[in-house]
Length: 252
Image (tube, rainbow, N blue to C red; front, side, top):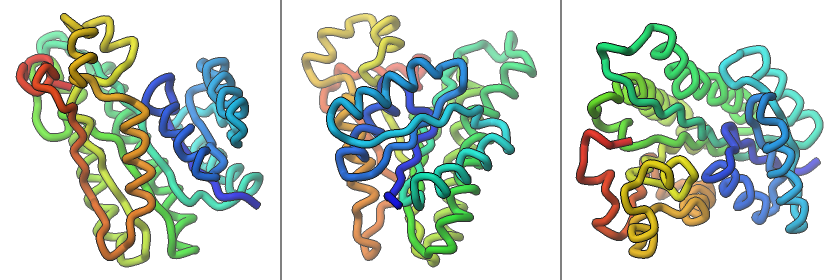
């Protein structure tokens, strides 16, 4: 049996970089996205294989309890013990509270908060039997404060942060490291490229977070000695040109 790293929300940028970083550390990267993104998920697996490392695709809807339970069971049975589980689903949307529908608010909460609970609970249930493991949740500036148009996203991310704190309190004494990472700025993704007013200038000045640099911090969290565990880590770019830190209305 091999040691497994589960990445829920293994997208094309940060999630994929996290998967690759753990694969390079000798883990089988067990990557998850919804079934409709199976092609992209398989492409990520193949890119990890091309580097000479191991990965497996687990398409499933992280909001559906039965699918999450089945996915975790399959990994533990077919790959090995999940030593680290990362929840990286974003669900960033911007709507005026006046236009926000109940359906949108509920779906954002399901994706960014409820799905985190399902993954966290299932990973924890396995880890407590071994008295070992790491669970990491990806947060955002919206985890810390609200912004115009971000009532759904901030509400969900705030809930995820409280989940992480509660789990850390309960599971820490059982040798399970629970961490929450605040991504306080724009990441080098197609989405940010499309909305940033001067992306290339900001990136050249290290004003945009690198997915690979973020991923290395997740690996570092997992490697921390338990005498000095970090629960909450705030990642932001070097340059003041990272406009998210100054314009609250655009905050993510």
